[in-house]
Image: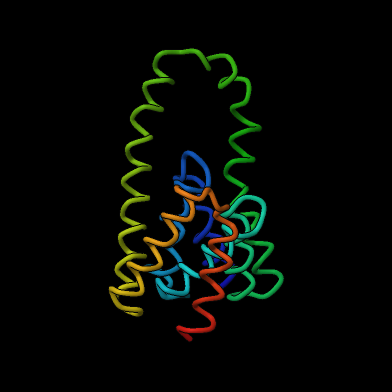
Length: 176
């Protein structure tokens, strides 16, 4: 039964997450944290940070890890397939149709309506992460890390990968 739950937890966001990883991550969080309670928001945030630090698509890395934690190697395989399955199926089935109507005004309008929805989902996820960080680490550390990260990325053009690794190191040393 756990393999079926793992499959559903990643297949449903894969179907509904139009736009790739950034749009499906809040949906995955809802399934993993909200519905199945496999992780806390803080643990999910750490997995997301680790997924961002590694090369490749975020959602597939996260699904492989979470699937492995819940169902071992077979759980990892099921979760990864469930994540890429909807896109794979839709690409195979609708490739000709999408190519034929790619310049259609209706398709372009649909994209315009989907973008704000993705922005709202990402905003809600960011708020939940921020709230969890404040609850576990306090305002001072949360604000200091956010401000320092912003300054390093925007002013000094430091790579986000370096900042994520440094934040993970800081958390491991001073917040454990």
